[in-house]
Length: 198
Image (tube, rainbow, N blue to C red):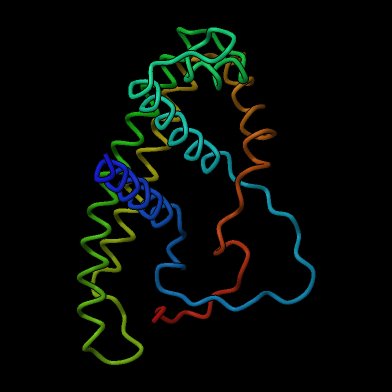
């Protein structure tokens, strides 16, 4: 069983790093950051970013429910925790679960492509001039844009299927409960200087 735990850890680590890469702004792919001076203002986290976190968390809960089909003390399956907290019906939650799994799948595909491009860039820049402009930067930016469009499309389809009342409940959860747990990206908090990280 230790090998299985190690594989799960490696998968979770790879998924987390990939999600972080895809959530980064294009500037952070090529920039070092310097600390911002002066007082910082709390930043509003974009709703699309909150949706991304929500989708990936719900997909994780779906996988847990399949792996561990147990009930909590009140007799509800583990995956029901979030549905009850948001206040949606089981039918509405099926749409959310399906969207979450599609976003997770798109994240895995885009993440694998991004990792391959980044590895090639590291090899190219390792022996090249300093500072080095990664040769695959345009492809990474296009991949990031494509992934964000897929997530935005999934958000639009989900909101359309839920209707205005249920969408308002979901937005309320995202902007209050989830937003308190999600930090804005480092790129949004720092100034960039335009050089490649070493």
